[in-house]
Length: 392
Ligand code: FEO
Image 1: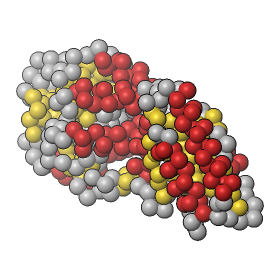
Image 2: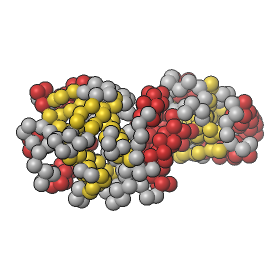
Image 3: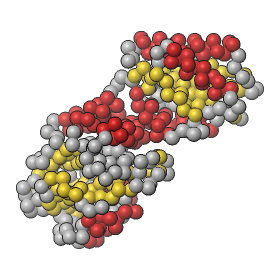
Image 4: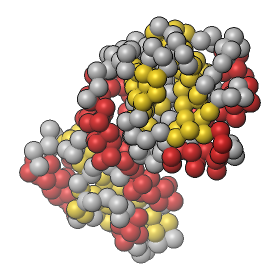
């Protein structure tokens, strides 16, 4: 795709990766992604903001074919899907410098072996004049690495944010046209990548709020020409209050745990609680992460394998612990054949979750009447706890 103009002397560049289906050998990309770079030509200086994944460097070099000079390559973030093509751009533009945060410099030296003399570092709030345009660099750490920053184009009211506000979405739409579709993609992105840093992001949102913003231009997915759409969504996601939602990730080998899950889900629904049920043997972990953004309670369902939880449950519990959602309550249900230490082992996997553990329900073999009563009791407790916390 060719470069596309988004303002006077400001161009979208980059590559749309329609077919990529996995990121970091971990994160599903059902809708592909894009690596957005931006070229800003001022009256005196020209900058390239971020680059592309190294697998698509040819696309960026083609877009830069008629660009004679670049003074700075701004590196908002050292991760290779944005920085990976920097060495190629530095080779093409021998006088260009990489402009980044002090932490970003160290990481780019380590990750891409760029010589130290090719760097200029900027402190939080520092500005750079391109002649008729002024760039302000705002440090926004932990979205989602420690070195991250964003750039505000003062005269044009454009905020270029790299991963912050991004969405893994391959599209020819330069701007958001389908808000519902972008909302889901951006929430998936937040859930998988940003959620562990929720509290820092709250501060970063306040930091950017003092600027008049007409466009938010991220490095994944379309540009936001209605910035409140994504800023308000982020405010909701990072807020302290969960919603009246229970997430039930589970595995079942012979149907006993499945029966318990189905019974509990029905009992919760009868009590007005929204439930998201995930059979981990077929679950897209991005969908599970999205559900965890707003949930107040997680109930993990597991059969017993060699005395402990099913390996898929280990994985899901580890993931939930790493993502640090704003859960308030947790419980465990499941079945065993002769003995089980599943409860202790799962509880040990989620130390980061600041949750109250509600009475687990474990049964020997297939659930019987007493087990269903215990599940009813668990559902009643969850509904009551949610009411006590005024969760809507
Ligand atoms: Fe899109 Fe953290 O890289």
